[in-house]
Image (cartoon, rainbow, N blue to C red; front, side, top):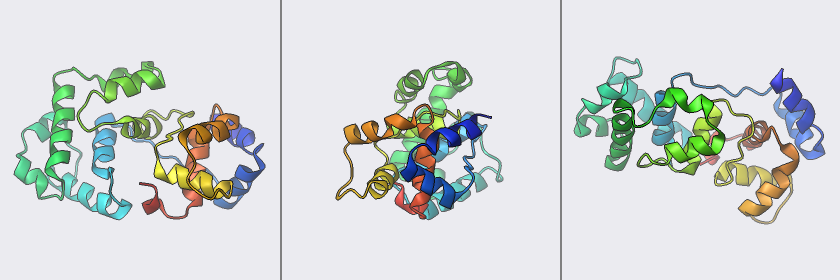
Length: 203
């Protein structure tokens, strides 16, 4: 299995091997509903895990707890969406995403056939979706194994701790350190997130 091969490979890094031993089995959960994955990523932006979870739950309750389709969101007033705790800006982001999917300008079902960079290029055309959000989509929706989100605060903190650095590493330093983790940088990233023991720190 790919995951077993990933663990064998990553354990060659003695520092990472210790984290893998302490954390245990890798449990990255992917979301089949790609629209849901992107909406959740937008909700999560710049929020703690607990705040994002509360807003997400209220958002789902607007649609009887099932996850809505893009057309359902487009039919929902901005004021109703804002009552869930979403900012006006995030409401506009989610509606822009919904509009692009409904018009077929963005075709999520074709994403699996694209390279990581092609997926990112497609997604960042949506208002409010930057590289980090697109990378979370690659990890948690498409299940890509070699994503290194260098702009992610949790990964920066994890690498800083792993190598006892005095300050957060630069993107270039992160890429250099992670080179030995290819082609399983997603799995390494997950273990470094877990090593922080507090997902609210990820950012």
